Amino acid sequence: MKKTISIIGSGFSALAASCYLAQQGHEVTIYEKNDSIGGRARQFKSNGFTFDMGPSWYWMPDVFERFFNDFDKKQSEYYELIKLNPAYRVYFGIDDFISIHDNLEAIKSTFENIEKGSGQKLQSFINSAKSNYDIAIKDLVYRPGVSALELITSKTILKLNQFLSNVSSDIRKEFKDERLIQILEFPVLFLGAKPSKTPSFYNFMNYADFGLGTWHPKTGMFDVVRGIEKLALELGVTIKTNSPVEKIIIEDQTATGIIIDGKKIKSDIILSGADYHHTETLLEKQHRSYSETYWESRVFAPSSLLFFVGFDKKIENITHHALFFDVDFNQHAADIYDNPKWPDAPLFYANFPSKTDETAAPEGMETGFFLIPLAPGINDSQLLREEYFAKIINRFEQITQQKIKNNIIFKRSFCKNDFVTDYHAYKGNAYGMANTLLQTAFLRPKLKSKKVRNLYFTGQLTVPGPGVPPALISGKLVAELIQKSLRS
Ligand SMILES: Cc1cc2nc3c(=O)[nH]c(=O)nc-3n(C[C@H](O)[C@H](O)[C@H](O)COP(=O)(O)OP(=O)(O)OC[C@H]3O[C@@H](n4cnc5c(N)ncnc54)[C@H](O)[C@@H]3O)c2cc1C
Image (cartoon, rainbow, N blue to C red):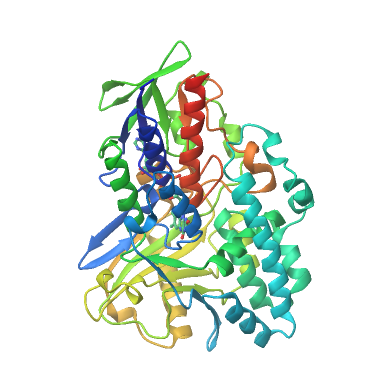
């Protein structure tokens, strides 16, 4: 039966869910608080530069393809992809960097040149990662997190021990060169926790990295938002921006509508793609499924300090994606997770999309994005932001051996306070709740409210977790759950 469904937010999970729900025949409207769609993957343009505000690594292309295939479409009908080579470069100091190429054979020989015997070990490690990837995609991540039994299949049972060990110790058993170790630990950082707290099974992210490669949508990650928006509109979804939801109306333990600008909008079903914690604040206390103590005790993915920078010249000695691991990785991780504080010596990530996409910057210029991961909930001020910009730009100049400070013609920062204001992010988290052992699958906040009928959740704080591919999967899972509830 056709239902009226209101969706809060327009991030990837909400956009994906809207497509599936419209495909089921419902009347679907998205209400987004900001003036543009895409959530953390928004884009802005200024002075001729184009900036993707959040995700920049397009990994797991199979998940995007599967999403479009669900609507009898192909990803290539909506945007074009370019495979990056090198995929990325990791800097460890002046004249000390490792480039990761776009195929495993080349990566193996890079490893072998650095540590004798590590090429073969890498092959075995990636074989295990691929086996886990196949199981994760086939048997695990497309499960709604309703029950522990979802994790028990003939294949996963053989892998149970991999939930009791961690990625970091596995890597350290096989590899000795600290630089190779850091490169192998990097992919699981996308899951939001320290590698030493991430179950070994999640090494499937290493297969996503070295096996499936790093891709770039031709004119930036926002191509993907635009592509899914186009599909949603084709399916009949209505999208309203500048529409912050102020309250979810509950009558008789049932969600019956939302309030925007003081006006009631009646709906049969409410689905929130906004941060889970924030959504619950739109409810009276007795209708919330999780307490403040619950949220306080969870491990959140880091917040971040971001800089969007326009340079009036081309930047040398740099690749599209660049990781600056020239300082102590473990100390920075401790400053995020163990003893939260601004790191004395921050690791940082930079990307220059105009290296691949000439439309991202005016001719002869460069678009730069810089990211420092920080503890969620950290104090944030303009002074600290500038202090840290100076730190990383000085290091950038030293390591890449060039002067760039005087070539900055545009700069905008974005940090914890902006994550809170712009996205209602709990503690200003950048990418949701971490995937640790105790926050995996059925142990994550539920897609369906435990207290209120017809109220559902999707996105990076619920299953399967942080990242763009999981957000698309989350949208599918919740749409299936809604369909199942309507049938029963
Ligand atoms: C800096 C950064 C870098 C990242 N890098 C990568 C990467 O390289 N690769 C990758 O795969 N992932 C990356 N991620 C993670 C990825 O972007 C997210 O996991 C994903 O986009 C989250 O989607 P979502 O739908 O869960 O939530 P969101 O994108 O946060 O969407 C939630 C939406 O709800 C809206 N909203 C909130 N409250 C209300 C309200 N009351 N009324 C109406 N609307 C409301 C918000 O404005 C927002 O639009 C990155 C994230 C960040 C921030």
